[in-house]
Image (cartoon, rainbow, N blue to C red; front, side):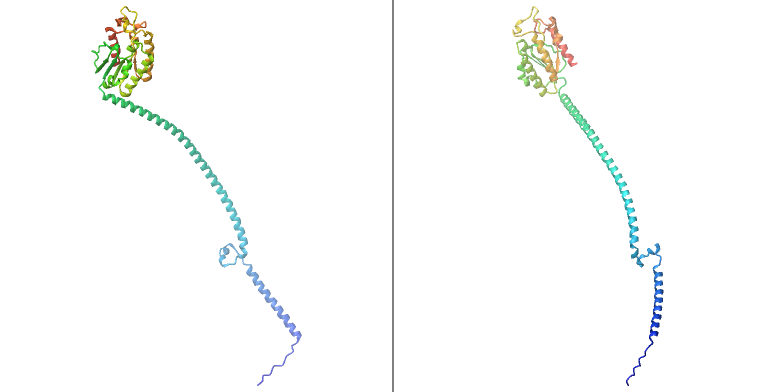
Length: 324
């Protein structure tokens, strides 16, 4: 059955307008109440305690404020930290300079003491070597027969009486022994006897036969050096030339060559002494013990050249004194 539509009701326009106004007023009232409730919500106080619970809150609107405060604190912290670092840096700087100064000072002291120590060490080593050489020479001497004495001479020793000479001895003597002859035969004249003490009285034959003083000194030098090198433990005693007396009646001029001059003896003896000093051997000045007024003492010679018995006794005393 067809439903009948309700007939259209024509409402009064004034009533409609009135209702609209009423609704508008109610809506405004409701909206005002909602707004008051929202204000109450936004007025919640955000204190420090609630900020600590920021995980559950929307604190985006506070980020600017917090960042600002954090920046200030950070700046203060940085400034303070910078000041602290500066102080530490200054301390480190002082410590570094202190150790650097100590290092330089220590190095200087080391160099000074090291130089002195090295020098002292060299002196000690030098002295030790010297002592070792002396000890070796001493040991070499100890290997020898004590006081093994060799007498080597020309006519100056011909009649020397050694009976009272109580030491092991060898007597090598020829009237015409020249320095040149001995120099060329050192092995048979000296070395084979291996002397611990050597007395040399050479040159008298050479000088009275007109020998050259320079050549005589050169030959003497070779003889002495030869003995020192081959028998370094041997003590060498070189006797000066004997004086001559040509003013006595019994003077034998046949023993003296025409080229001889009396003052040659003094000249040679002076050079011989210098040579002995240079080569560090003993020089026995028998000349001054036998001379009077620059001539051989009359009491010590019969012919003006050779020594007599009294002369040899005097010479023996000079030699024996060396052995005492």
